Image 1: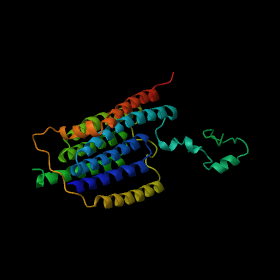
Image 2: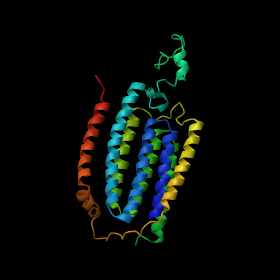
Image 3: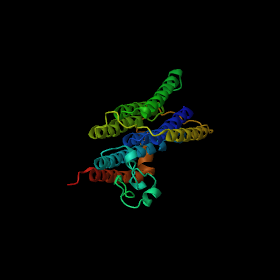
Image 4: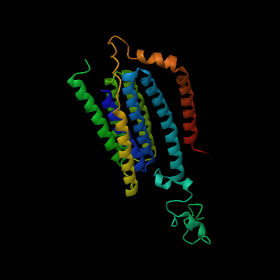
Length: 128
Length: 170
């Protein structure tokens, strides 16, 4: 049954990837990452049917790392929620330098502004 | 013996249930419903582990993944009051969905080609008299003893980090 297990594992992994690429809720994206870890665990178990019990040991390691990742990641999400009042990743783009509410979402036009316009949103550093 | 018709039927049943649950999980808008569908997927995976002679890992899957980790997720969803469907669209725009579809199909094709490689013969099943933890303990406490010990440090760091990050600054 190992080829079937690898088949299921591939499909589950791809479902997780598509979820990460299409969703915007940070918690759901985290759950998709957990789904991808589970898919890899399934192929580890499948290969442990062929190559011995080391695969099961790796599954245990993956589970402990996933537990640590869930704890730290959810703490980060709580901290972000406290700061932004949202977990929608559309609104969390500090590293981009401008915000999604910005009326000039293009950085070049933002810099070209002569002075703080009356309609500046003040939420990104190029519009400030 | 684990090679009869019932075994194969149950294997496909649990595998397809896991895939269908995962697909429903990805498309739910409500975070609580999504988490519960993911729990269903994890239960089905635990059944698959048990059917592939990894009984201990199956039990750990139910206890740690479906129990502890998903409860933490649900707890955070409750804490942030995200149970209601969001007013803004949770799904990304059409372009992002098309890119995700193309990337997913490409990755699926690649993984399926890899999964069709010639595989060696399966190992014999464990005799029924042996304990389920016996095959794991040998590699875990001999070959992988150092990673096992480092994992404890990792968990300690994760606990401290979670407390520091989630603590309300006064």
